[in-house]
Length: 392
Image 1 (tube, helix red, strand yellow):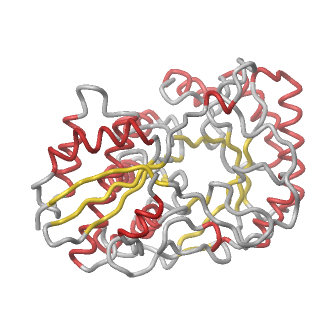
Image 2 (image 1 turned 45 degrees about the vertical axis):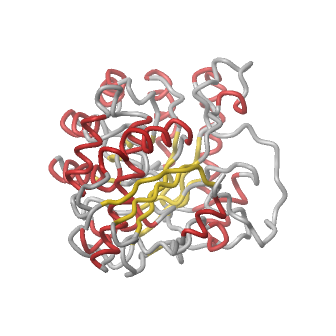
């Protein structure tokens, strides 16, 4: 079966909540900011304006698969103007070949970054199509189920309702692990370290001794600050520190590893394709690799990263992996993945997780665990009419 058409377009995946959150919104500064040194440039200005992208790959018989990613306009152009002409006519089963074609033809302008987002959307769509044509779930195509279900943790990416009510809600939903985002960084000096310690200490007391607690700095720290911060947080048994440096600053990753040999370090959501992960694994820069399956190069790249991790005795916990079926299927099949992240705010306090699902066919997390369906492909229940209703 050949690929007949590849087409990408912007879509709106904002969920429509039916339940009113049980607490009001509160003023907040948002998660840690890589732009904190330039306070005059507001987040509404430096955050990019692009929408999500849906990529539809259609076979000769009309069967189609869907992949999604972010960074709208530029990624849409890469898919429609560059990748599509090269891949139309290729075998729809040839996931390895199609991925390699996209990686090679994008090398002239850089496979990492925007091109990687485009590769991800196309690759995941082809895997979805492949599963539908073979009438098997993707996780079976990857080797079959490695676990009965996937343990999940909740990330408090949305601070709109306050940290404490959000964490209470995560615990009520059955999550056995939660992640905090640190608001303060080097620009805040010792006061920022004190505030971060207060936040972590308060949350540790709130969740008790038997719930894992992680912290995420979202690219905003430097070597000195990281060392001082983790020294302050040592009493609270933080499971890992995540995403703490600019992604390309490999030298600083090495320095942090040398300075903090006993701290569990996690990173990778802003690393693209397989090579940064191979370097990080071979040099021991981090303990946990965190690719985003919709950013890093899709399912094909993600499977490679899992194998790299296993070869080096590391684990993989994909960024936002439990938000959509793509990461659920990967985690279901890969021994290197012990748990998965539910992010994008998880759900406002009091709002059921089912109401936050944005892609039809996505299984909601229950009691802190999830298992994707056995439906063909990624199990997405997406029609062309649905895509048209979400198009921008």
